[in-house]
Every structure is written in C-alpha cells, then in structure tokens.
Length: 299
View 1 (cartoon, helix red, strand yellow):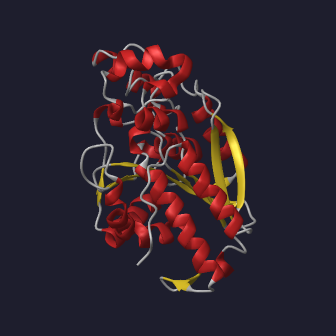
View 2 (view 1 turned 30 degrees about the vertical axis):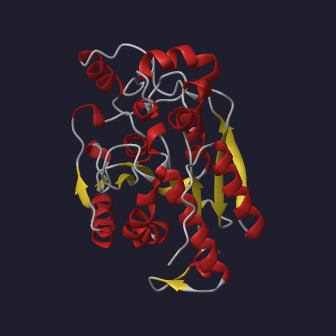
C-alpha cells in the first residue's frame, strides 16, 4: 500500500514535498508559474517534454487543500512507475511521456490555503478584511487573500454569476462566492489563463472537494467527447457525473476552458464530508481516483 504524508499542505509542507520530489526524480520540471496576491509561489510541475499536455489544478479554494495532497501524491506515484518501468492499466507511461506531458499545478490559491490552515494572521495586510468575513472560523475561507473566490473569477458567464451573487447579498470581498469586479482581476486566475495560452492542453481538470462528483458540461461549447470521458472517469472511481446549478454554473476554470477552447474541461469534487476534509480521508480518496487520474493523462 502506498505510504501517505498525512500533514496539512500549508506553504512549508507543500514546498518540502515538492523539493523532495525534485531531488529524487530529476526528470520532472518544476517552475514557479506566478505569484499570488501575497507574493507566494504558484508552482507547477511537468513530466514529459512536449506541449501536447493535460493540466491538473488543485486548491482553487483555500478550504480544499486536500486536493493539493492528492495531486502531489499522484505525481509521486507516477514518478515511481516511470522509474520502475512498470505499466499501469496496461499503459507504459515512460514511453507515453516521450510524446506527451502532464502539468500539475498543486495549489492555485496558496494565500487562501494559508488562511484556512493558519488563520487570519497569514493574510498580512488583508488581515482586517479576513477577520471581518471569517467569523472566527478559518475553515470557511475559500477565497484568495483579498476576498475573491477564484472559482467565480474566470470569464465564462461571469456577468450572470455576478448578478446571482448580488441577488444573494454578496456585493464585495468575502470568504466565498465573490467573483471580483471583473473576470481575471486576480493574479492567480491570470496565471492559469497565460498557462493555457502557452500550452495546447488536450483537457483540463480542476480538483475541488467535496461530493464525489464529476462535472463535465458548460453550455453549447461542450465537446461531445466530454460526456464519454466523464463516464469513463466515473466508472473507474465510482463517482457520479453531475451538472451544476445556480451560482455553480459559470465563472470557473472548467467553464472558461470549455467556452474558450472548445475542448473538454472537468471539475472533480473529491471525497465526502464537510470542508476542510480530514487529511486521514486522503488514502480512500486516492484509492477511489487513482485509475481515473491515470486515464485522464492518456486520453
């Protein structure tokens, strides 16, 4: 059975994990894609030498940092499989990565993760704003340091989502569901936009928690292949395929990628429970999703 690092994925632990992987597997490529609002690194790790790639993104929401742990452990096992020349679900990944690649961005929202794990002091100059809206419960913090929900800040149906926010009484920065003054106002979402412009991703997957659900559709731009892929992921993981409702429709990475590039985009809600999910749930989440994640690399 795979050994799991069951520590929280704050900045220190995340950096240590990435550094260990770099030292042990020199074939992986690590870069700092951009900086967050508080100038924290937004890291990405790449395996493979081409731009024919897929993108996995974790921790868009601060309280959902278990997705960072999931992706880093998955990356570690993929590296082990390559080194040992093993096949997984009949696929030789070492050969596969000669003509393809994967980019894993384990933590899109490092500021939000720090706030959720270590409290309002982590918000620095935004501490007053965070204290006002977290109501002494850092576990409710999904937004970035200045109170923008990154999953509402992508340019896909943004105006509709913004109107729904206001109808729900959300008019400015808060812990969740405020999409900013306009799409792509935040350095974190701008970073993803630029990355997608640089790479010809076959598809992107944004990992959230919780619900054991796979979302695959956004409007008329959704490719026909998206539902087929979602069904395959669901079969391998025992997750269900779903369609979002209300404020969950639009504003997210999946939605923007589908609309912009007319290619498959997915949101996978991992695990069950109340966010933040307990880190001790990671082994079960990982076991449920491992084959689906491997399949997602090669499709």
